[in-house]
Length: 156
Image (cartoon, rainbow, N blue to C red; front, side):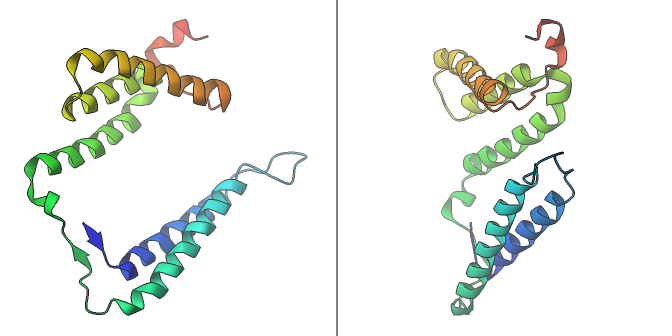
């Protein structure tokens, strides 16, 4: 699916503005000028600036439709894969607090690997390795608190 640059630019500008607006509500860090909202504000401002560039470029696309569907949209398997990815993300968002990061990420990866045709003998080992790698990256290196859910009793 291809969106007209004017429509893409408008959506990006609105989303970037919403990110900037919401990030300004983050609480200030005591004793520091740089708080938790700085990077989201910078990213949102960058997105809004890119949206403005796309809006400007979209002026030249008067004869192009707002939305053009690609060939893959006519293939049911590809549409199913797209719906499955969105559904997996919604599942993650709804289940991660209850099940915890380890179980949710493992289920998330296994379902997508199976749907996308990864060899069955590699699905579980890769899902375990990816889940552990993501946990180390976020929990240990970036110090992002990930929920333990049902595994709270064995949290380290």
